[in-house]
Length: 311
Image (tube, rainbow, N blue to C red; front, side, top):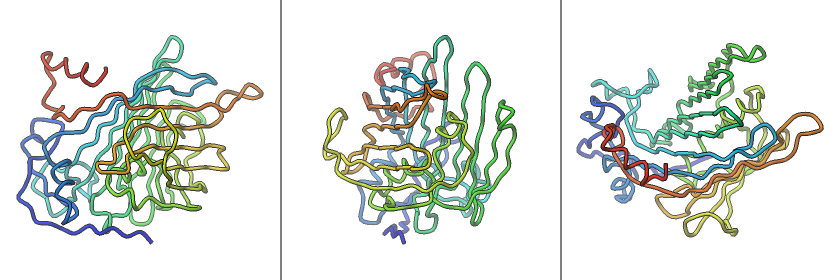
């Protein structure tokens, strides 16, 4: 059973990190470990953490070069509607760490653009799992959208796809570990990452790209020191999620010391069709990182920030 020593702290309201003019002037109630002023100073400074990764993405039995960007930011989240708080209903909200993970890569003549959003409560004693995950994927053939909402003891999944075999979906999955929430857990409480044989719902981006059904899988999870090279940072650890049935292993490399930045990841699985399918590895390595209030940097004069981020 997971434990987290998160205590509620009454702190003067801090300017909410948001994505529009209204939210930039909104306020956020902070929840953080009572003895961890460093946590508050980092995540409640009115900025988002932006990281760019050199991406080698597996698709169609080949490796395609591209970019990945991780955006981590705190905000208040309504637990009833499961949307960002933009009103005065603070009694219905809880502070979260939000991840927006974006990938862009070309496949031959056409491009892929994918984005996953994870909404992870900071008070993991009251909310042990992410409340919401949404993923969209766009490429020249069409687009897909997937959303999971935690309702009582189930994740309610809504899916939309241009593929006939997938179409519109409305299903329920038992509330268990989400692969997508492991990324945000690393940033908030890596000591609580689960280990051993577990029931896990695979990542939504992986499921969409592989066109496998959304379902609970058995996975073997572990945390260990990362002893290889090729990733930035010091005192690195690696969190591995191995799916025997899927013949897939995801490895997330992160810094053991706060703020537990993600140095990169590897995702090894088969790609291609029939006898031509082969085991390949998607790999991402962090190259740039900045802290910025990006939601207010939307004019042409702000475009230079993209160079700082390696884009």
